[in-house]
Amino acid sequence: MNRLWIRKAGMIFLPAVVAVIAAALPVAAVPNDPTYGENEMEVLAHGPVHEAFAETVAFDPEPGIIVPKAPPEPINEIPPDQKPDGDVDWIPGYWGWDDDRNDFIWISGTWRAVPPGRQWVPGYWINTAEGYQWITGYWASVADSTTTYLPEPPESVEAGPNVNALSPNQTWIPGCWIWYQNAYAWRPGYWAPVRADRVWIPAHYVWTPMGYVFVGGYWDFAVGSRGVFFAPVAFGVSFTFGSGFYFTPSFVINLGVFSNCLFLRPRYHHYYFGDYYATRYYQRGIYPWFSPHARRHGYDPIYAHQRWKHRNDPHWESNLQATYQLRLRNQAARPPRTLREARRLQQKSIAAKASGRGFQQPFDPLIRSKGGLPKLKTLSNSERVQFERRGKQVRNLSSERLKLESRGLKQPSRRPSREFKATLPKSPIVSKPVGRASITAKAVPSKRKTVQVPQTPTVKWPESRTAPSAVSKAPGRPSKPTDAPTARKFPSKSPGVSKAPEPRSKPAGVPAARKTPPARYQTSKTDPTVQPVQRKPIKTWGKTSSRPSPNRKSAPDTSRLSKLSSARSKPAGPEASQKMPEAQQHQGGPASGWDRPGGAVPGTGASRRSMRGR
View: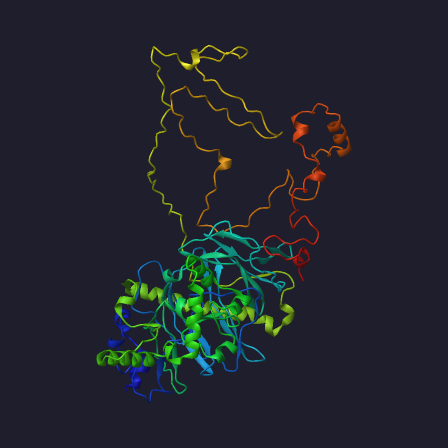
């Protein structure tokens, strides 16, 4: 084997389409020799998911894992020659920890469709007194020109929905603590409409040595539309990285792992894919993505979206449980862990099929055929240089973030007791403006079509018939102008309510035209491009709080009203009949949790006492 070629050319240096096909790989790159070991590189079919490709959400942010070794220097990673068709960016890889090897593995870079209105802030490893700790990355808002570090938020009181959804096309948005006027206030959860092609990432906090960073909720693309996710790579302990070494990821991971063999490690803030079915992984805090234990630690956006997607399948979750239990008991049913093992299983399947023996090949996380790839586009030289430059800028942003936030470990007094703002370099991975056309000096003609509103047709009556305006009036009714139809007046039902529009009477024999219902009866349309907002509290008899309004009239005396009622006196007019005594306003039902002392907070079931911050 030519070791010098590996050091200079990287693991696999082929076009992306050819490189993902296992049969086209050179033997020197990934050998089938059983002595393949500590001096080589190995393509893995399991491991952590790049955190920019799938972001986890924790209810209570906590520090990352601490490992005993220092990570190696980042390797020179070059993006493949081809990228998915569409607007995607290249986000470079980073070193991740592998418990089985007790060493670092390389989490390959990814082609990623940037979520609308977001920018990527990469994570890093920091040296602490206990070891090296991982600080997670996050998708920040493009509107944040500075990074705001906050004190520790109180423990989450999110307990899930306490009311049913109004529609099966709604999902539960969990509550969150919000920093407001130098204190934390609890924003309860609510039901919101679901978008089939998007996944809602709720608001959450990210722990850093400098403080807590708030990440607002946003709509991310569905997993199948996010881009291309490459396999991680393990380097042997004796592998040496030369001065001219560079690495190009080539093996693509099947996105079916997000519904087949997906796991979640809340403490590491990473998703895992592949074979993590052994009992030792559960003890390490790596849980199945559908496990209630995983959902107690945080909110799983992928599970929530998949659960809604399979809402009409009553056996969906039980099938996931059955598959997990089968792979837990039967090791042969588990997915392969490496590329070599996947090839061996494929050869075994081919031999069993040729001999007529039955063999059920387990799920393969690696894509090893051209048919499983998305539509690809060859990069030009200028695009390749641009993506490489962005990769270096991402590394620089990670280093600058390490320098800034490491002050919190060196000098704990620098940790903010109130909000603290700092400026980091601008992220090169940022979404493009959506829905804004470029403005040029040349006037652009409007492409809007002029819609002519049809006028109300004039009804011509035969000479033998009498027009409605000429009908003799009934006794006691005032006459109307001949050019206006008669109208029926509807008295106002309550003071302060505007009168309903007077409908025009239709002549006999003419069908009534369908009218558009009033605006108050029309359902408001939800804008799918904006973040779901919290529902406003329902107003009760003209007030939204217990504070009395200065313009509000005092409630009438109930004893006086009872005397008037017993004497069968004449009502005092529509205003008095429509006015409800303030003491009786809440007798028809319980008051809201905000109006009752110690009552339940809407949407959470938690008491008002739990809303106080620490």
